[in-house]
Each structure stands twice: as C-alpha cells, then as structure tokens.
Image 1 (cartoon, rainbow, N blue to C red):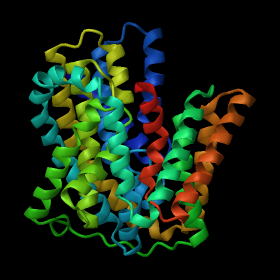
Image 2: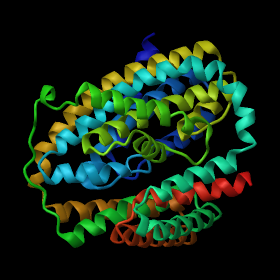
Image 3: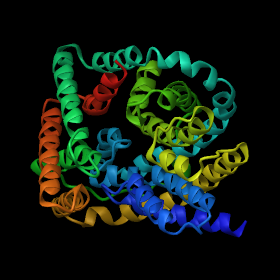
Length: 406
C-alpha cells in the first residue's frame, strides 16, 4: 500500500513538471523510464505502471497552463490557445484554466462510466471497425475541413494536405523524437512568433473566487454530452486525438461559448488518456505513449491491474486538480509582471534547445530536427496568418494513418 501511494505521489510530481514544461512530453519520460527499467529488473513493474498512469493524468491537468499563459501548447492542448488567450488578454487567464480543470475533473467520471462498455462491447465491434478504418478517418477529415467557413475550405484542404506530407516525411526520417520538432513548430513556435510580431501585452490578471467561475447546469449538460459522444472515437481510431474529438463534439452540440469549449477540452483531454489504458486492456491497442509503456511493463494485464489503474486515475486526478488550481493562481499573479516579449523569446529558445537535444546527438540528426522545426513553424505561421483553424494541421498524423490503412 505504501509503495502504491509513493508511486502516485512521484508520478504526480513528474506529471506537474512535464505539464508545465513546454515541449517535455510524458512519452519522453516513459521512454527514459523503460530504458532504466531494463537495467534495474529488481524494480516492481507495477510500481512503474502506477507511476506512469499518475504522471499521465497529472500532465493532462497541468498542460493547459503553459498553453494559456505562454502560448506554448502540446498536440492535445493547442486548441485552448485561441479562447484561452482571448480570456488572458481580458485579464481572465486564471478563469480560463479553471474552466479546463472543471472539465478535467468531470472527465474522470466519464472514464469510470465507459469502463464496462469498453470491457464488454469494444472487443466485439472493433474487428468490424478495422475493416473500415480508412473511410472513417477520411470522413472525419472531411467533417473537420467542412467545419471551416465556405470561402476558406479550399485553403483548409490545402493546409491539411501540406501537413500530411510534412507528417509522412517527418515520420520517415531518422530522428529520435520526430513528433517533438513537428508539433513544436506547428503549434508552439508559430504561436509564439505571431505573438512577438503582434507585440502582445498581458494585462493584470484577476484571481476570481472558484464559486464565481461557473457554468449553468444546462451548459454543463450540453458540454458533457459532447465529451461523452466524441471521446470514444479516440480509443479505436488511430490518428485521432483530443483536438479532433473536441471539434467533433463542438460541431455536434453546437458549442460556441469560449468557457464551454475550454471545459470540453479539459474533459476530453482526461477522458482520452484514461480510456487509453482501458482500451489497452480490452483490445490490446495502444493510443498513447503512456499506454505503450504500460503494455511493455505489464505483458499480463489482469482485471485487478485495471481496477488499480482506475483507482490511480481518480486519485491522481483529484490531487492534480487542487495542485493545478494553486499553480494557476501563481501564474496569474505574476505573469503580467514579466514582459511578454522576453517571456516569448525565452520560451522559443527553450523549445529550440529542446529540439536540438532530443533530435539526436549527431550533427546530422540535429540538422534534420531543425529542418522539421523550421518547416513546421512556417506552415503554422501561414495557417495562423490565413485565419484558418489550426486543427487542419493535424493532417500531419491523420494522412499518414489513412495511408497505413489503405
């Protein structure tokens, strides 16, 4: 029991670090852990499993903080930049984070709700879905493109295709962490460069009491319905993540309110991560880096393991909620005192060094990583300047996946 608690606490601690650090992903930590585990086989593998699950859940609660306050997202939180940044410029950055955290805590209940369905129903329907995977992904891609305004759909399609070719090229290059320079450029560096160009100035942030940051029951029901409908797609459709599920839910339930959308993103972010472990148990498929790590540590994944993982998800989520509130308050209290231009430049430099460090230790690997970063950044800037939704940049994963299943 003590070992279980220690694993949760350590996992949450590392998840806080990865969530708050732009560019440092839990997949990277999982890879490092697995390499150490092979050298120290006396470590209890289930201790590491609980650690990884706690880290993954804590990360999903924390990763909206740098997205909103720094404009440095990962592939799951980049959609929060627009509504989150708008609220930040109104002095409501703290409230923006709290809406995502409300969604995240509600997402824990959805994970529990879906567990029996995924255990008993998913194994029966998944073989049928595998045969039509490519058409489903093409249909979802078209839905996302047609969600654009009519006059921008052709440009959205063009950006989607360009991102797809960039994704195919990147995944076929000899780089250790190919998605790091790709996503850093598409969603992180491009946003920061645009902010520098616009000379953004952050106003003093209001720390609003939690009981005053709320949505009506009708809004919560509508938003949670969107999360419940859209989230399961990510469990069995490769290439589909939090961002696509959020936009599908937004379209289905006609969600236009910024606060509702942030709530939806927070909920789906946690649901996607939680369901990835249940999907691993039910059909043996891995949809997140954390689930891949768990599969390697637990070749015999039992029902008891699953129940302990579910308990870990709930405990880590509740603890992370409280910690994320505290960190959000700290960020809101001091962020406006730091010149945004300096903050953006430091974040850009940090991302640049991160790409260099993790691309490869060779000169060739570093050059390839930088080429991917520069190309992805250029495409990201073009997309933002064209006022086209950045969700189309996720063609970098969807198109390679579609080709895989054709």
